Length: 262
Image 1: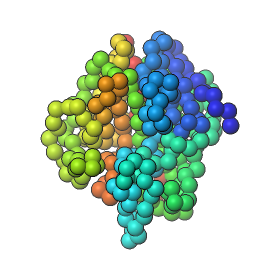
Image 2 (image 1 turned 45 degrees about the vertical axis):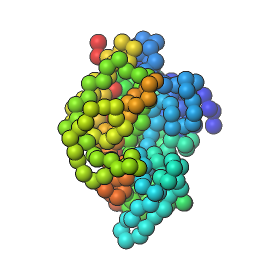
Image 3 (image 1 turned 135 degrees about the horizontal axis):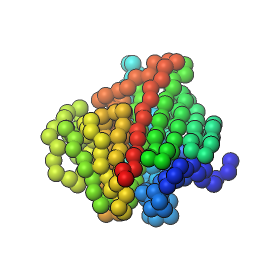
Image 4 (image 1 turned 135 degrees about the vertical axis):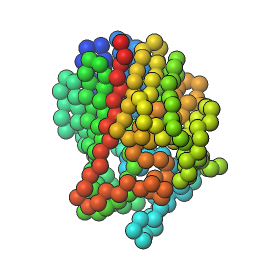
């Protein structure tokens, strides 16, 4: 498969998509201004750049283990003692459709130790003159499974972050969310929040509004060079504390919008 990025664009907005690099958005530019941390900026592995899909789970699964319908499952641990961010971001995705302003990617999920349930994922990115729309759909084949999914954008350090969540999931000493909502403390954060309002972000003078069909967001603004603002269907360790069960033959979807404010 060709490793070259695939570009989609409309007006002043261009998006580089990297099908072979985890099906991620490698860069978004507005009038030539890059919004995301690029592969060449501080590359230290596939977790650190662009805007990548977290699927079929988002965030950490505690100790890589969970129970589902009376059976215990153990996943490979790739972040200390925990399994983090699924398999999509390290997989090669297929380009199913592509035109000047949109692209559709597909991925067959494994049915092995990495993820024993199988299933399929589709991502669609669409660019218009006023922003970018992202859609992810997860389909179960013959087996039901507990899913959580979303995107992990690494925004270049914002000049402004207007984020007003109503609650936060308390996290423990392992930095993993618990099934308990608490008041939102002052930042910096590496936390999961309940938020129903669009999030305002300004990167190098470009004003953005980020929204999603889910009220679950993770914000990681501790690094000096970047801030991650992550829409996802559930909190970390969702398979245990807030499972989204996709029944055999069923599906679930998430949509997000990144609007450019002029």
